Image (tube, rainbow, N blue to C red; front, side):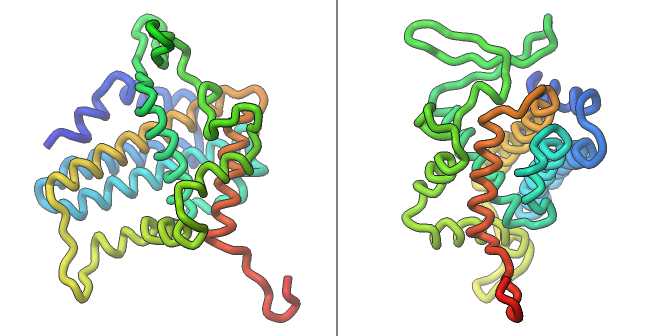
Length: 256
């Protein structure tokens, strides 16, 4: 099984792994390194335990989320990023879920990412009609919602929520993913947890892509001279979803 190795050895992932030491520091750097280490562990232990391997992969994604949030806080996005508790599994699932939606859309439009050895930089390639257009890979290339005239967090929040029949279903989805650690590692009345090799391959591929993408995003925000509308939009939308998943506590004495 070489699912993870094939991806982290790719020139794009190698670039991300190298550049974290140039652009990240403190918690962001530590989380980035730990995320990659857990991807490697997921690969190495796959032949011994599929569930533990998948657990390592999901933990890698959570560490990558923490890396992105820490980098955002340090690079001009503190007002939104500070609302996220990087120790809360459910909140990190919200961030990962948004990332997955964006990744799915990028795959649908056949966005290709490549490494330019000459410039030692990453490029985004997308087809426009009969031509392939190439841009430097930056977060500013992305938009979460279809309405380009409305880059507000509310619009991005509506785009995410619309994937579910109602708010309750969305909250249940987030909590289910957040509780994967328990379902992956502990037996229940129905028996011991188990994943097939096919299921594991799919999961490892998904979480490796998410982890690499989130770490790249953490690097990209360090370049921003002023806040990018897309990042503000996404962080604001994530904050709104978190308010649904983790409603603010109300004091039973004063009601505030």
